[in-house]
Image (cartoon, rainbow, N blue to C red; front, side, top):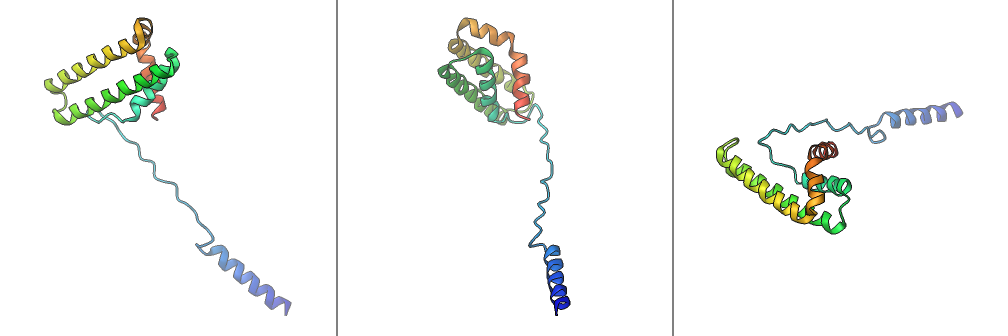
Length: 136
């Protein structure tokens, strides 16, 4: 009788082992890389990431960090709206982007003060590279 019981147990274990109910093999999600072009909208996380980098590099107070994040979020919103409104690389779009950037720079200068604003301007490229690393 033991060989029959062993055969039944072996048969059930082999069946269970091959049954998909017991083997959930999650397939890895396909890797999808988003390719951004100059015409693509700026992701909303860009403002947060740049504000975080600025807070660290410029040693901003929590109040300054919040204000910078607000300024940058507003800038991203306006820039994305302009990209939707005007054709890519059009003079109207370029003029609107220039206006948006000038307003943003003025607001940042008021928030940061002259010393930290000069430091920001000097380190802008480095901060942009750090921000892009965070978005990957």
